[in-house]
Length: 346
Ligand SMILES: *Cc1c(COP(=O)(O)O)cnc(C)c1O
Image (tube, rainbow, N blue to C red):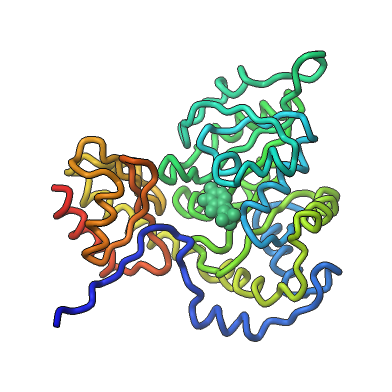
């Protein structure tokens, strides 16, 4: 009988599972009622994340989407406007939440990922005072940028955006689901990134490997309002310390190891670059975007062929696929996936 196929799951860094040490920390967590603010583990997690990002306070949320949407509602009143990338997670992967729950109107700049030009954003800003236009109230950026393949917005660009927001009185939110990856890839300290924004959301359940949870950080007064919005959205959890403990473990132990995921992604990109599907030099974090337009495969066909060899990849659009490295993918898995995809594509 043939060996069972090796399964290397490169679909997403959301597929990570808690390690035995993380599970032990979760089992031992002290808990309380977090709606009353009395869960010590949640409070510790919120404080540690806020401190690392250079902010006053944090709020634990069940998902990154909820953290983002609370952040946007803090900055943009109903009927007013948010500017973001056309591929922004906050607009295209959160089920229209900004419009449905926040009454937030949005306009987008063309999808450019990390190659954002502040001058382009400035031209889009609509200042308050007109009788027939709603005012721009905030800008949202994504670091790293998911749909563009984990690209990083340069620090200088972010500083220019901060200056724009200060000049026009706008809020600046960062969807930092993978801000950890940008920090590890560039060496820019987390608080240097964090202080540029009015609010930042970070995910604990992607590359960091916690099973559940995100944290929104901002100032203390805004966090008090954020607690109300979270409860309104149904995100007030009780003994949430059980899951927060997984996030706390991840925060304390799993950030430096993201460098390994980046090295794995670079190896995959280098192996597949000769097929003309990826620019290996552009892969700096844990996402490897594959452009299949010059191959005989569409994304569904490549995913099915790879699956037959025990390699799982995700389909991004009909002719684009994506590989994601994470805690659950080891070096042998990367070699296997590189070989399988190389043989299919070349
Ligand atoms: C995963 C992700 C989020 C949060 O997603 P949830 O599934 O709601 O936790 C937010 N932004 C980006 C860019 C992401 O990749």
